[in-house]
Image 1 (cartoon, helix red, strand yellow):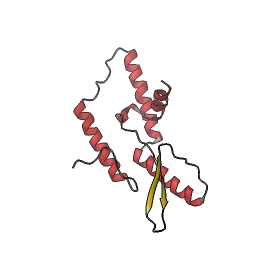
Image 2: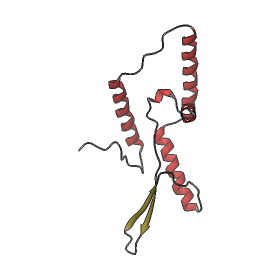
Image 3: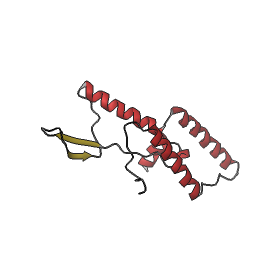
Image 4: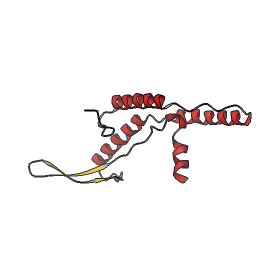
Length: 132
């Protein structure tokens, strides 16, 4: 229940459930020939910044994540108003808006993926995979 509360307080219901992401940390070692060796993948990487280079890299990564998510303060204000309107409609006995159909959700997901791919600069989509 607490996680649902936190999620709903940050992301509007109007996002059709597409505002999910995970930032992974990759530890790589370079050998004497500058060949990379993957040491481990962290599902919860540290965002501490110990050097100016570390700061620039992590700031750029987080900035791009926020651009990909397209989360804006104004969206939260619109969502609060939508929630108020829905509450008022329930109090007045009006019917709530019907949920989206499965086909509509597929269309929305495809549009969202297209937008994200267009906005991605240094990220690469790994899931869902491209059809082969």
